[in-house]
Image (cartoon, rainbow, N blue to C red; front, top):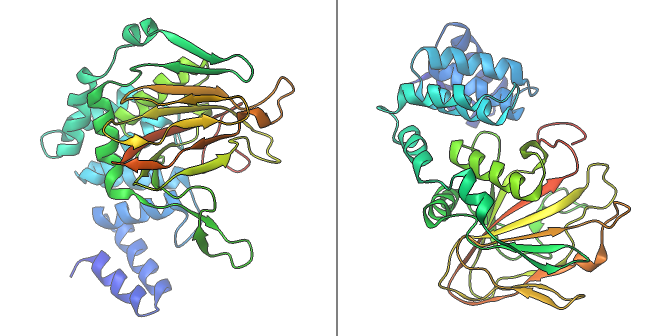
Amino acid sequence: MSIIDQAQQLARAGRTPEAVALVERAADGNDAEAQFALGNWRLFGLNGPRDLKKAHELLRRAGDKGHVEAIRTRAALLANGTGCAPDEKRAVKMLGKIRGRDPYAALQLAFQDKMRSEAEVSRLPVETLSEAPLIKAIRGLLNPEECRYVMTMAQPSLEPSYVIDPRTGGRMPHPVRTSTGMSFGPTTEDLVIRRINRRLARVTGTRVEWGEPLHILNYAPGQEYRPHVDALPGVANQRHWTLLVYLNDGYAGGATRFDKIGVEFSGRAGDALIFHNVDDAGRGDPLTQHAGLPVTSGTKWLATRWIRQAPYHPWSEGS
């Protein structure tokens, strides 16, 4: 039985402190699997405080012993600058060392040549749908291969949309959004997703580190996103921009509608809708209230990037 299996057995028996101590001893003794597990705990603040510096060190040590998942995870963190300065070139080199043993690393590296170039993106026409609030559309911002990649990577992690019940602290169905969804957080923002996020920053005139994790929504027939605004109440680092990318065709309904200004947009695979969420004073603009109308047939996939006015990281206090 492996160290991790033993630790899980102890945890299931209610002996979590013993399980943690077992993994820590094994990590100190140069067990790569234990180092990888403990590194993930330090990333997510499980069984102890979050410590990104310690997490990088543990993942590096596991990777030095050839642990593929540790190398792949650390490459993602290096690419998006979590706990370190961003270094995409170094991340590419790391993945190159395991591409023969790891199909996911090989896929990321091979996919770089399938992506739209910066020159292609700069030539795409921009259509203004509204001046106040500013709403723009860009057709074909993502190519078909990129759309399929995002959907394929998101599919296994989709779950129903929930919010936290303020009375109980437990999860409850989202009162506005009835879709399923997931987010590409720091450990899953791979090289392809990172390049897509950089493109979304480019077309909004912002910086990639200002964006929240790319969020994916999947709507089955009858599901919708009821009228809402994306600006958040009482936050210092406001969502200035929203960028939606439609990832597929073959469904009916599901248009994005701005009721207060009479604008409605239906995107095809790869099309993007961009809108400014705040007024000239930086306050949430009620005219940006919008809805994702119910899907009537088929399945709709949508990628959403909420972009703040300053750097944002989901693991940073006060982001």
